[in-house]
Length: 239
Image (tube, rainbow, N blue to C red; front, side, top):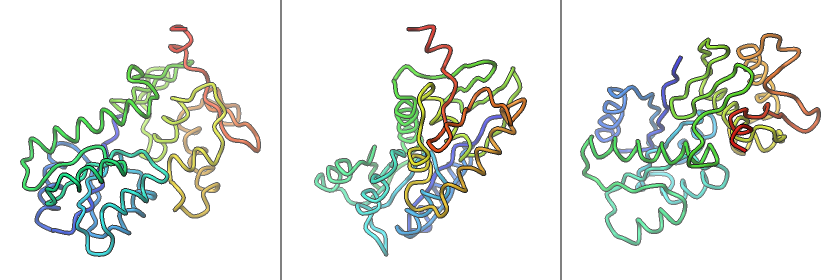
């Protein structure tokens, strides 16, 4: 089963926010909206969107500070949408870590093209290589771009957070990833009781992926340290 890509829209102008949300939903995206910068930072940590559409002129927190805070812990693609047209503003936003900048007013075709580009670059970054597209090991197959997970040919539905955890471990397969590294990648520093949340998600993931969750084949626990994904067989073959 294919998961919908989640887009977080941080925009305080309701008509623009509604236009973007309607456009995205018509294209099969899931949207989360807020008009406040601080809430946007919090939603980034709790909802784990695949991409953020960010207005710079927010009432409570300047968009530049939103970028700075998110970039302190996450590489989620950020597409700035703003009425500010000065080159200095664009350079500052990009230097702070924004992936692209689109100036108001804009059309839906341009917006969708920019989103697809940012998502593609984000997928490449997550995979650790421009050519990494899939993971395969012992019946488990993950297509990062299509967000498809199968076990022995059977589609497996993972939540957005579960898919982020599995993808992070898969692109780092064969390596032990510490609990803190996983938590930082998925939730950032703003989630409460991070270790408990990770354990709960991992238990759910194993119930979905493993034939016997008590004796996992794909995601192994390194007690007191973290988790290690079974080595990617396609990577082994290419070496």
